Length: 336
Image 1 (cartoon, helix red, strand yellow):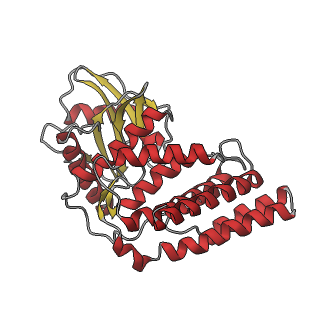
Image 2: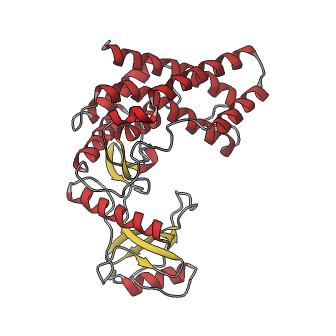
Image 3: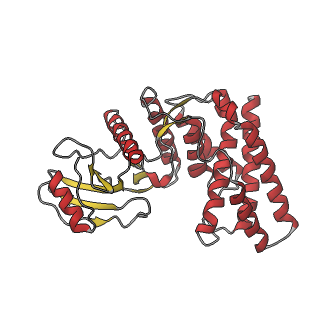
């Protein structure tokens, strides 16, 4: 690694890469057009040695420690034949280069697009997540309280804003009834997912952000699992809840479709790791909390519509979905 004066611009990025990597002839890097550039600059690098993705990070101790772990994790997954982007090492054998205020990594570029939701891709995604958890079960991770996760409960103000937008759209008894049902679900979820009860949930290295945008497919072939930034020690239940929320529940208000999709993913997951009784009972509440939080956050960020639905419409959708999720938890509890 090296330190140098802060630089900006694609020509400087190209210069840094040429100085530290053996790629042969290289074209000028360009921004990756299909992704946001909020946390990192993401640039495509084409060279004699192949096609790569360059990403920049803040140069601070916390970020760099996380980067070391991510790169070790990627190496472990590569060695276990999971489809992830291998890290290109510098001439000196390092996995990233540091400047005064930022760092740069180079990883293999993975072709593909967001996961299409089909019977086959749900199986593939579930099996890949189970395999991810299985092969990483003995891998050390940076210390943190694995029982805490980002969406273990819905922030009150976030949900209040969601409710206020729904009421503005139409202030009627139907909206209030939907809201009351969702709030009851959240109260039950708080009990079910109480932090002291999470000792019953198995922990290990998790991905932390398992959704279709981080699963790159070519047709119905999983070509890459990307974005390990939230990976670390955690409850496996967190990853599974994310997967079910993002890939199975989505906008559906069809109980048969919800059950079919969810079972498809979970059955594939359990090829590699069996859910415990405690996990299966709590899972559906964890899915609901994650789903409600995601919708509540995204509505104001997406001009009042998520997946084409307004706040009032989402109140009705979430009411149906949370009632279905509560029923599935009840069935799991009593073995129905």
